[in-house]
Image (cartoon, rainbow, N blue to C red; front, side):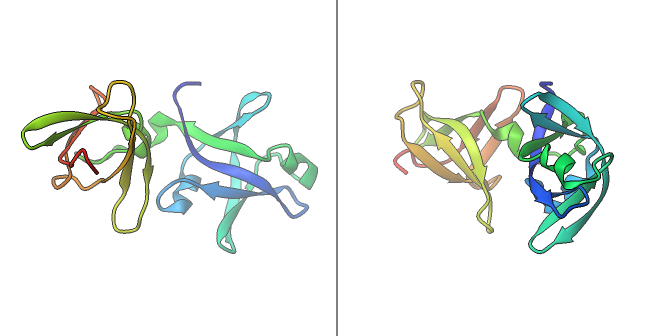
Amino acid sequence: MSNLIDIGRISGAHGIKGWVKVNSQTEPPENIFNYQPWYVKTAHGVKSIELKEWRSQGKGYVAKLKGIDDRNQAEAFCPVVVAVEKASLPALDENEFYWFELEGCRVSSRFDNTMFDLGVVKRIMPTGANDVLVIVGDEQSIDLNERLVPYVLGQFVTQVSLEDKTIHVEWDPEF
């Protein structure tokens, strides 16, 4: 299903009553439980599963899935990627974007009145202060270097066009 977006992982079984350990890629992490149904990507294809309940456990989360009542059944779902339909994600305000929307965008920089193609966003890295675009150069860019550009709208990131899959930044191409 091409309309799915990864939001976490089921990493292992927890206990003997069918609970599983859940690693979230959402912000805040507990938001993973707001999206239903989950689709798990198994060796046998994509399967829809429903959440029965969840709770915080130590530094992470555990969940009980409907119809999964013992450890052996839970282990059949480990490890798997958890995805949801993109349409189930809430709409964002103007100039807000999901990370998956920025990944793959081509990045260009205006520096000293010259445009430079820096490459493509490979991933976004959280740093606490602000997110950072990890840009990888390719055959279309000025070089093959990897660059880290702070994702600060209005300061370093001047324009994002999801339609064109482009991001314009003001960044010294030597960095």
